[in-house]
Length: 366
Length: 161
Image 1 (cartoon, chains in turn red, brown):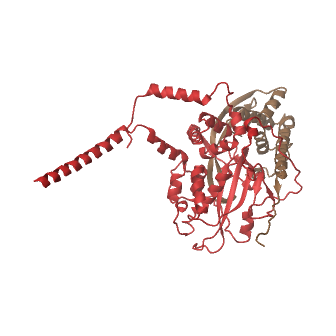
Image 2 (image 1 turned 90 degrees about the vertical axis):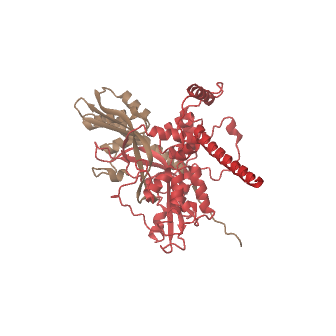
Image 3 (image 1 turned 60 degrees about the vertical axis):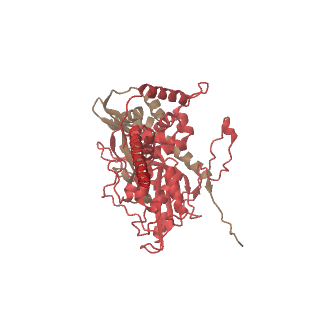
């Protein structure tokens, strides 16, 4: 139990003033602007948007600046800000098939219709620290080439459905869609609630769990079927208009993973799939999400559940970074009363123990 | 979601010149605010505009589909700014745009009202909607060209022989 504290106002104010001073750093160095952050620190901004569950680069940049680049702190700020705005409604479901693609890879097929485009990726870089960035980098603009054909990039899962290897996704739009920001997550969770929770989850936690499945803890042989990245139109139906209106576009990363069915599955031979979707270019996050969407299908697929990544109580109960950090960091608040109670208990136990010793000594001498 | 399914007038690919309301709202929301600001600045004989609502910012919960085409789920939220204005003859105009962009939403609503009112529709389409559509199409083409330059054809080497 935590007992409320009071006092310390002046110290707290001064600590925060120092924090502000330290955040600004050496005044001889120009101050960062938020456009610099969202233009040049895009992957950090993406992560804050994804885990903050609010897709707005300008807001995420403010949060990152305020948090001195501490991603978990910035996520917390964005989640808190989100609570101050009214909810106007829900968008129409995103049509990722109609994405204006900047990147599309199909690691399971060499020649998928629509082909593969690497896009702006870190893949195949040498990961050597480049000291040009320590001074100034002024790269040339991206190369261009004229597309010479117009094959649509049909999702590879459609081909596998057509061949009967995976079950089709069957949308039932008459069902209400779970929203864990409105009603707390109930277990067992539906796939809608699970995907929402995974989408907001801490990337580090999800990465560790996804990795554990690859190392054999509840794992399957996993293939990344397709990753696509690009811009998708966002639309919704305003009450006053009564028809869907495109209100802009957002960059998204989508990932589909495939696993051969487990031999103990009651569904017979075939492939199962997992799905990941992230704001911005959160590719690692989308991949982790897809792996865990798959591993958490263990219950509904009748697979043996013997690893953390298959246990939805464990995964969904611990993936939220804001909740986890909040509970962890409350340990830093004064726990004087609690701890005094612990000590009092220990002292009384120690006293009774020594009394018992005294008693036994007395008996010995008697 | 795509323009193809949301056109209530049954013209999925109407031209910028025709610019049905869903199409013009979409186009104006997808270009930089500065483009609309310049167009408004250059507009001669500006009408009297009354604000009916906003501009105000709220949130939309973005929905995805499992597997890209299956069960719906809530991905996360996005700020949206909306504005409603009307002209002197009460013709309303609506603006909706992603982000905290009060001015952008207001400008969309003004141009929407001017096209809806009718007498200056051709002028506004010519001055704003068509150039905006071209701007967006150029941006899309540039993205496709950059992506095309990264098109990759990996060949597999047979190992172990």
